[in-house]
Length: 230
Image 1 (cartoon, rainbow, N blue to C red):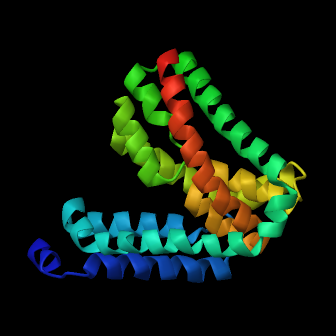
Image 2 (cartoon, rainbow, N blue to C red):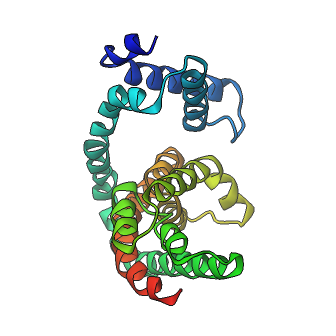
């Protein structure tokens, strides 16, 4: 069976998009945060690989082409930001303060929990870039000597949770200002969260897109400083 999958160039792309489509269909039928297309696609794909005895490398060799779309998709996030330049100019100081505060809070919380649970230095620096986009997070983890695979997993989990619960959390804490919601989502759950922010509104999506880039840059600097504290 594995031989069949190995010679099927795009089977990974097909089953990934197929399971995502099923997740989207279920989301339309069941209005609940846990019924999330990305989460369901991951679960269904893992089950499929397990049932048919397909190893991850075989799957990834044919699914990796999806990742090629990440760069143009990320660049496209600049479009809603361009449309909201006036909003950004009016709220520039607040946006910058919000992004900076988010990065600092992330660093401090990771440091506090790492000390509380007695994590090693390598485990500690692994978690520092958990809330930024994957390419930057991988670079930070490698530079600081962390476990890259765990960093990627933590980034994915942060993104999925943000996509699932961002809107509910904003309502819970009475956050209704579009700029504030966008900054919070982008800083905490990067691109996956930004997908949700775009669903919430164009302003939210634009501010979230900006936050991804700036939070990533600030995290590179902050992580280098905080890495010396444990």
